[in-house]
Amino acid sequence: MSWTDILTGIGMVLVIEGLVYALAPSLVERLLEALREMPLDARRNLGLATLVTGIIFLWIAN
Image (cartoon, one colour):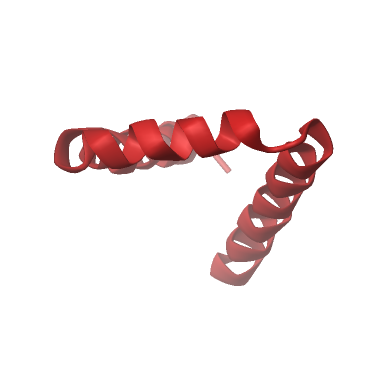
């Protein structure tokens, strides 16, 4: 893995997040509000599930 791969991955994440904010800003506000209402443990578990899913995707891609 090189710096080019890392920068490409970060760039892709930023493009996708930028599209979400540009195309559906009200949806982002509702999602953030829903996150605020979630208990801390649920947010932590959601983050861990997202992390594991990302690792699995990377493992499959390689």
